[in-house]
Image 1 (cartoon, helix red, strand yellow):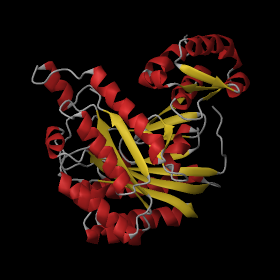
Image 2 (cartoon, helix red, strand yellow; image 1 turned 180 degrees about the horizontal axis):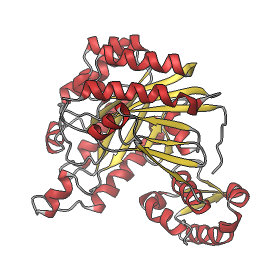
Image 3 (cartoon, rainbow, N blue to C red; image 1 turned 45 degrees about the vertical axis):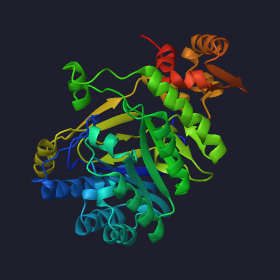
Image 4 (cartoon, helix red, strand yellow; image 1 turned 90 degrees about the vertical axis):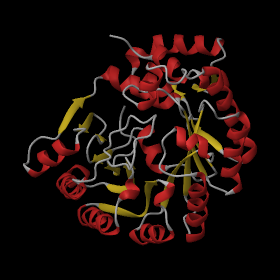
Length: 382
């Protein structure tokens, strides 16, 4: 898939530390902070050395993800921003997001973030019910969630997003609706809501294998997804991606750039980069990453995407978006797959899994329940 915007880029900065391991999480992170200072130094070195990859491009978005970026101290954050501003052309109106846990967002820390230039917060609420938070092994409680949102808004973080999880086994439908109602009550303009899933090598998957807990129930998850989708429009949210919901003008610019195939650079252990032709990913080990940077050894792997891989990625990303699959783009960029793809798309329309309007195919409600499965049906094969 060709780059949609040639002269822009986004920066992703991975902070691979967490206070504890959530039961469902399979992202790369460590709960050991002993090498944090060394890792930040290596991260800063990588950011500086890879500036050539963004030559001639304006940085439109910066995103601190993790892990838990809110474990960064004021001096560490200042050092990272210094090398970014010295090495890259950062737009005056760049969206600068930091993911944060509620228990980190004291008023003092919020002021630090504001002063450092963070203008968008993504707060990992997950649930406003303490029982759910304990079950997920989260580091915060419900009261801290309420306080973090209130303080962030009072300090002026109007561009605010919250994460919620649905399909938690003990979460009743009333509790799920209460979670959504609180997002509305606080006038939070962006919501990311994810279905609880069982990923390999997580505490949740181990507990299920050991029969410590029962397998998740699909009908429970789908039911709460439907509640979410019923809630969205009456509360003036746009379901612009299958897991992301925004008030008018409040879409995540950084994540949207991923989904539309734009250039981005990722820094830190396990971070990915994309230039329109090639994908790069850094080693997913903090100690090895530090050692490689310090000793000028390779720390990344590269993959030149084949036409088939670009097509499959286009399908996977675009099907999740409100704009859906543009068959005109498929014909222009992937003509060798267009005929078979169209036949499958038309079949899905007949199954009432997709809508077709003006050569754009978008998910129906039933299609949203099966999005990943539909993508696999559309993928090109060898």
